[in-house]
Image (cartoon, rainbow over all chains, first blue to last red; front, side, top):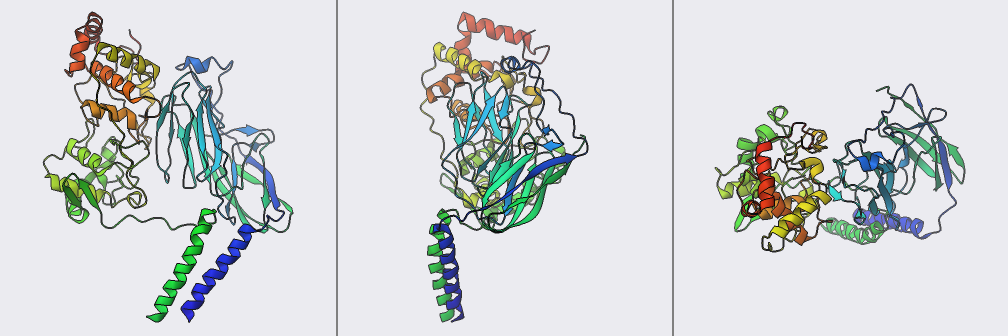
Length: 238
Length: 299
């Protein structure tokens, strides 16, 4: 009898989940805020592209490395802010996330997309690149992409932050952020972010930066309110 | 007993509901997959057994590859490139596409061949059965052998007849695909990016020097050469060209690469040297030996 109840309980809870799935989305709350740093960040060095003239000629002044990108008011860019707990996993959207190699750099420097979402990698340069992401949980592959060849289409089936490099051009460095759900944002100029359409609930919001690590905060959303969450990273001078 | 049955039934019913739900992305976190305790390998008529392989592993392999198979054996700090990490299950010499697991036969051949320029010797001294057992045991370190199937080996069409045109076209591809960026214009492993290369463990690694007398890590035959650039050497800077090189072009590139190996006699080298142009190029290389700058630029 007891066993019966266990089976029934599983059924009931599943039915409830089904209702949430099928029902219309409730008007959601929003989490927004700003990511800043304190201290002195390392000075980004200019990139010497002289070994790749086809890229070097695209710049009047050499571009600098992007491992730390700061903005006005101590704001920090390229931080991935996402819901790490509290939200259900989402199915991948039909649109592809696009990662472009242009001027021997990765655009964007940090690309966030969902588990099993199509990732399109494009080479707009006049030189061969090899795309070599270095995952720990997902499969590691390494593909060559000479100029004028079609986009590479890939996907990842596990959530992970993945450094990306091109072995031919050692200064090229980027990141993939493979997300479990659709609630994520990457800070741009000014360090601000917005996570919208959050159903009421208790969430863990995490901010991840490739050089400064990650931080988390708990936030409870009720109704369609907007809550402010700010993150401050300690900058390392090296 | 009856209760057990009912519980099982309840679970079954629950599962039939969970499965459709999971396709909608509502799936809860799965516990991490565990490696299999027992594995078999199949190489031709041979069937390897991991329990028998375990005894061999803890006699011959664990000094470098470590008791947990993660490449952190007692000798590992003194070994470069680092011993293979069987937990990550990323392997260089495969017949399967980049990012996929190798076949049992690929691993077996690696054991048999050993890896040039590394501390991994050839294990020809073991019997075929023992090598098959080791392959089976190596597969008990990573859960990937449970959750994934080995990739489908790439199709290698029959090698076309060797011609001068094929060699020359291969040479054009060597330029177009920018192989020289790492391997150097003359294939000496001294291209402009060569000195910056690192493997996936962030350890320095050198591109293959075609002019050395040694064969490359993954073999010496033409089909093996074909496989190297069409599958990529996973875990190293060498990418896969499968998406950008057509099979017939790939054979032309193989023919050209053979002419770079002027210290290894081959039909390709002989044919190239039978032309006045090829003879002059190879002769000049034999004199030049190494470029002065190491930058791949002719002095």
